[in-house]
Image 1 (cartoon, rainbow, N blue to C red):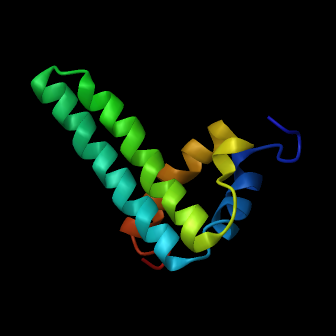
Image 2 (cartoon, helix red, strand yellow):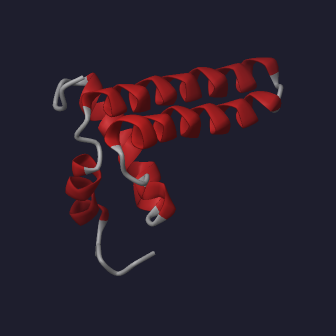
Length: 101
């Protein structure tokens, strides 16, 4: 990871700026919701294929948002761990109304 950000607290404002397009944020929200559903299905059915579906669907929705609406590269490519955490924090912030859905 680049030393550009010393902490997630420093990274998160950058992450939000990379998600300024409302459609991109909505696609992230849908993708993360699908991930949660697939994780639950993997546990309930004891079928690991749902884990692959969770991984693919989560990234697919996010990347469509970035490439077609936000017109930038996903932060995942440069900051994979912070980006993963950022998605979950942004999801929570959207759920509680801190970020416009």
